[in-house]
Length: 76
Image 1 (cartoon, helix red, strand yellow):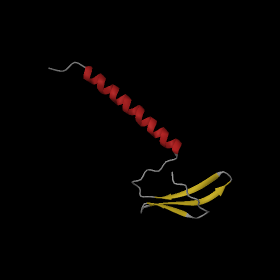
Image 2 (cartoon, rainbow, N blue to C red):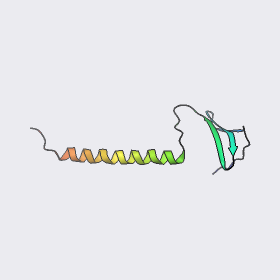
Image 3 (cartoon, rainbow, N blue to C red):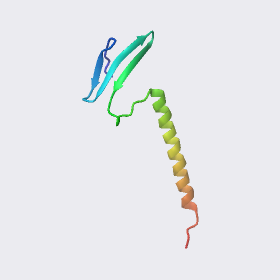
Image 4 (spheres, one colour):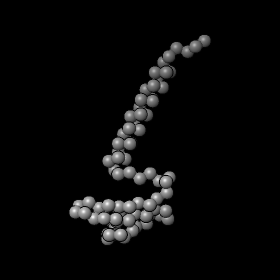
């Protein structure tokens, strides 16, 4: 893991298209501003985990539905 130290209003670049700027520091909270193309998904860790879990659950339901459909009698 790369560890960088930045002060208020300082920025880091990730590749050519992503910038992360320190906007505020209040106690143990840091507010970051992120500029990135719309094609780049940006989420807080806990939100990302929720999305991933929901997607996993949805795919399992879909697989179950497909298995059930396969068991239906075929029309002649």
